[in-house]
Length: 341
Image (cartoon, rainbow, N blue to C red; front, side):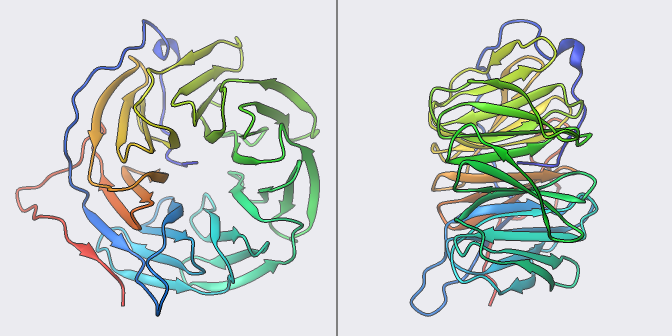
């Protein structure tokens, strides 16, 4: 889920029929980054990524034990964070850009000071592997989707478990807080989404937008719309006020990730190895970014910097303009892959 939450004009968001138009435009990323091989271990597939809000860092991890932090302006490695003993499946950065949390198959949550790369705290021995983590926007709560029937919400300050919420299914991997932190949504394998009130902890809504697994979920900036994607190749938007559910045109593969990237713009990626930039007002494709040679598992954007992580073991950094197109300069040179030593 992304924190690149830019304004969407509510009055015209869903007017007119949604159609798939626009041509595929091969577009080179500004940087291609790869976690290096270590000994007999090959470079990992990338399954977690986050662009630092209001900063110049990107954090990525995958099916090894390391978490790497790069500078998005230079492509240089800033930190290699060690502390996990198994696959790092999830991570998030607080809205102020200072606190990083990482989690995965070793059933531990590790909190890091992102600018320095120093470990601050860890929560050990959760009951099952951790599939997703999300800070709320105030930065005082953390939601953790564990492979069980309940969603856990922790106090960031104390590390204590504040409460548990009954999930729509055992395998829940998509989690998001609303922009004002009053709502929390989650979805998973059975295609259902559940919405809770964060003040009371009560369930306030449940709906089934997908026939198969939900892979990612986010809110628009107003908190009125919930956007989901999944294995049924569809992208859905629910108006929480009217209960109206809208569907973007089907894409050519499963949709694993989504991120708001600009005014009225949404980026999605999945098993077709492409990033699709959608115009949400008109429901059409603005541009398709190519370059990955494996499924795109994760997307994250902040302030026009879009990061994509893939099964091809690379992270790509794309600098987008207000139209969702890759920025070019007269001095642009062909992209080169950077592998930290």
